[in-house]
Amino acid sequence: MTKDYKIRNPSITLYPFHLRDDFDEGFQAVAKNAQDLWEILADDIGKTFNIPELQSLRNHLICYQNGQYYPSGEDKQSDYQELIASSQKTLRFQPNSQPDDLQLNGSIYPLRLHDTYTADLTLSVPTQTIPITQLQHFNPNGCLLPDNIKPSLGQTLLLYAEPISFDNYRRLADGCIQALWHNTPQPVPKLIAEGQLLGSPIFEYDHRNLNPAQQCHILVWLKGDPNTLNLPPSNFNYYLINLLFSHAKIRFAFAKSRELYREGQRLTSNIEKEIPQFTKIEQEPDAESRLTQLKQLLARIRTKVFDYTKCLSLLKENSNTLTVNTNNYREILEEIQKLTLADDNLDFLYKFLNLAEHDHQQQIQADLNYLFASQDLFQQMIATIRGMVEIEQIESDRRWQATENRQSRQLQEALARQEAAQREQERQAQEQAKQQEAREKKRERRLEDIIFFVGTVIGASGIFGSSYPLLQETPIQWHPDALLPIHPFVGSILWSIIFGIAIGLVTLFFLILIRKLLES
Image (spheres, rainbow, N blue to C red):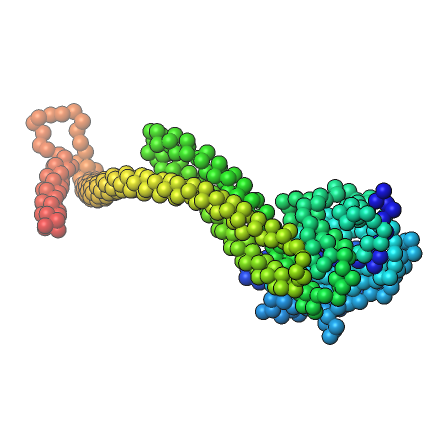
């Protein structure tokens, strides 16, 4: 039945929100994928709809230079910066033919809000009446859905149309959603709220997906008052885009907080698993092994507790982010409320504000209280282990010092023994030298005696030689006769011997005397 519904002047506006900055890398550090939003809008969406102006988007952005991403071209201090270099700040598209003879018009208004890139990308078919089934041409193959746009903070789609043929606003809105999701892999979002804005009914759909990059938030605004588009002042779009930005930031912060809480629980479990190790180490009998294991346990727990503390810090930051953006959301919503009509109903927007102010904040605070309680326990655990390490270290140092002293004494004793042995060796060497010298002197004396003996022999030989003529003069009678006188030769020999002995004794006496004088 809904396929027979018809609408006029339909338009769909994409509000993607993608982080430009990555605070994990430093203050105002540009995220590694910051330019992805502009690349997808130009290369994917621009080609899908065959929009030359959108395909050339990079040439018009101040954050690009010569076709390359150049974030330094932006004003780093600006909280709201228009990124189109021209004075118009909006890049408008020429009419473009689409299937079923649709003449597609549109524009893009790129912005930087604080640390986030966003845009108002509007595609419309003005002055044409179409069956709602042709809305599939506004989102072929789900090209405008989060799976394709990949905004890190999420996105909002706003569909506006003038009902022509329908029986119920709610069923018409549902039919529009069904048509937009034709041939798309994502499930169709569910209606979560409805209200009235500037005299016209508005319906809110969502997947309720906690992952901001996959959540599909869509508003269907159906004209119910002829003056709906003529009522909002020029700053209405400014408030709307900032409201949706705060909406995305709140959802992102809460989703991130749940992720961090689960990480905190995981770290808590890992740290608690170390407690039995502490008890086991206390029972280790070997002191050095106990000290080593305590140090290793302390290093492991400190690393895990550091990660745990960092997780807590990030969770606290997300709580602050949620608080700041909740306050911004409330202030902007109050400004929008001032622009509405008396019979408008913005309860669906206040419902989200109430969810952020109470449920989200209370949930994060409960998570923080739980994790902070565990942090105190872990800090006490570290202090206890550190104290035991210090005690064990002191005792180990004492044992080491005692060992060092003992080794030092042993070394000194060894050195003393070595010195004594060396002195003994020197004494023995000196003794051996003296003995050697004595032997040398003895050998010299023996040599002298031999020389003396040889000299005596030679002298005796001389005497014999000199007495030999006597032998010739008086031959010796070889038959002994006691009556015969001593032969002159024998007498000469005897007297020579007696003389030689006498001379030798005198010489020996003087030789001994001289030696004693020299030795003294």
